[in-house]
Amino acid sequence: MESLDRSTIWPYDERGEPRDFYYSRYGSPTVAAAERAVGELEGGEALLFPSGAGATTALVLSLLQPGDTVALAAGAYYGTGVTFSSLHKWGLKHVEFDQTGPPPDGVQLVWLEAPSNPFLTMPNLETAAAHPAPVVVDSTVATPVFLRPLEHGADYVLHSATKYLAGHDDVLAGAVVGRDLSELKLFRTRSGISPAPDSAWLLSRGLKTLELRVHRQTESATLLAERLRAHPAVHTVRYPGISGLISFDVDDPRRVETSTRLIVNATSLGGVTSVMESRARWEGDRVPPGLLRLSVGLEDPEALWADLAHALAPAA
Ligand code: PLP
Image (cartoon, rainbow, N blue to C red):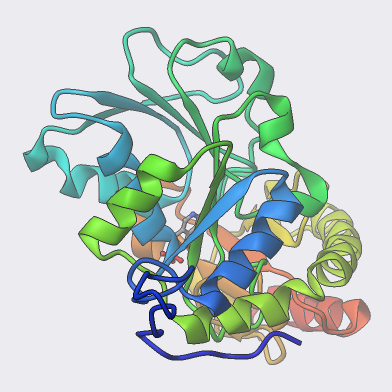
């Protein structure tokens, strides 16, 4: 078990030279241990950030210059486009494209999401890798258990480690994995977008059960997606066959999301507790008005189905 070291400083060596760790904005042993674990899972070098959005911001600011354009997968996590828009005044531009096909010409970064949240499309990694711009894959939902994007030609993998990697809805963290992250590490230190040791420790703890959790969540989600497809009150069911995230459309999403007893009506995804919410409350008309996003946790799948069936039953 890794120990949790909350120090911000460590003594220099007997010659007065800094050791591996000396000031925690530059790095700390607890953070480094979690980074090693994430790096091994993805097959690269990993850096942690205080959140997934923090990782996104640091990556685009360190890779791009004013006037550069990011091609962002349409239907990807709503907040990623929001983060990019907040950087427009600093000269960042972004355009959306269908990630099942080739990225547009004339962009300096390609941003994919595997699978996209909440539309759950998978990117065409091989086509994107043939594009001259570096390719980032936000692999938050796929997790390295199902996909290792660096092996498919991606240059960077990004995670909201808040979700499946940590897995218990008790830590906010982000990660970037790549082949050589020295520039990004320098930028992280200089910008101060540095992770906290407590978050890193919780992430290390969560990673120990990642594989077990996501396999079980996938089994349960596969069963629930199949039953939702056969349910008369459900229109479209989106489920890519990996991980625990499903989205489906109903006529009265507010009534359905507030009628479950076991599934919590809350945001986020990837935790051990099942949560469900209407995404239109956040994303407006970017999503179908009836779209519900369900993140399947570790509860008994039959109990989850009973809960969903009860919530989907016509109002008395
Ligand atoms: N990427 C994806 C796919 C997400 O779902 C989220 C959050 O919902 C993020 C990035 C942002 O991560 P965080 O909330 O940890 O900042």
